[in-house]
Length: 274
Image 1 (cartoon, rainbow, N blue to C red):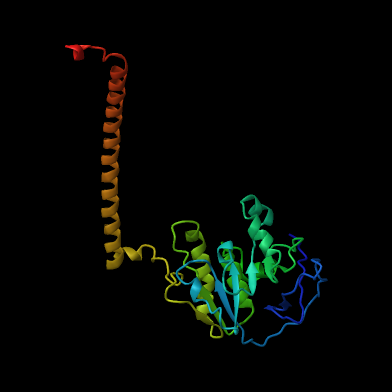
Image 2: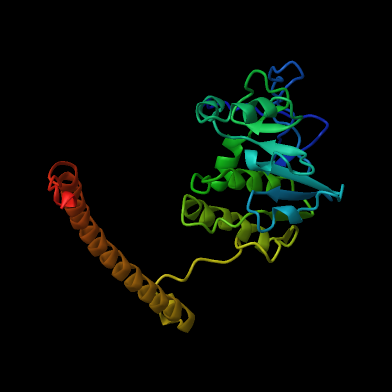
């Protein structure tokens, strides 16, 4: 990464500390010239920004029909959303194409605003994500999902409201690595006296992780824990029983194969003529 990170600004003003981060791409796909020491705009806007993930539990609850809200979204799963104003695709396009997402990447080329790593050729709405100033403010530890990048940038707009829809991160998968980082940013918004956070009750994302160690003194945790032990024991029993049945079936298959051999070659007694 270049140490002299370029900063851009235009009349469509988006605030990041003393820099204006917006329209980084000219209409021809080239990069606009950097404006050094762009003036900061300290007034708080009346903007409302909805951050959309793809969890079915609440993505449909985003305020698509309310034009006072900006809809920010990511993921090919959201391509059919009723309205999206700003897209984010912070993966490398070549990698996405190798993964079979050619149609998705071609579709993004025609979208009016797409935040990306770079001003990739052919993406007419590409905007360079302001990574360096974000790292300077937030540090290197929270960037574990596109939603973290989206929420961090939304915070820098100093909006009146931020809504988070379609975000659970509750599955036992990569989301477990992403969840805590996003919750750090959500906690920042919750503590803010200037930004109102909107999260539908259908979402899991505001549920904190159990308190390490202390949770073991909770009646609820202990009830869940013993239930987990019970289920694990039953599963292991069924697995052992299943393995026993598989061994029995293998034995019987061997006997069946032997019988088929005898039927094919040794059932020659002509006692049917008697």
